[in-house]
Length: 63
Image (cartoon, rainbow, N blue to C red; front, side, top):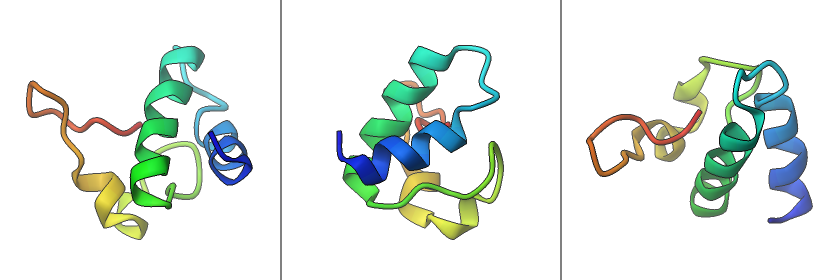
């Protein structure tokens, strides 16, 4: 990933229970959307692309 995504996702996932998984999906979403919401959770309206990405089950993909 890019250093932008790495640093943003590091903050985003700093309190995640599953660090590896959080960083993986955050990284995928960041590469696609070039945006990661601020804070460790919520604030997804800052990044509509990130907010609206869904996984194959139709659940939100991005942490």
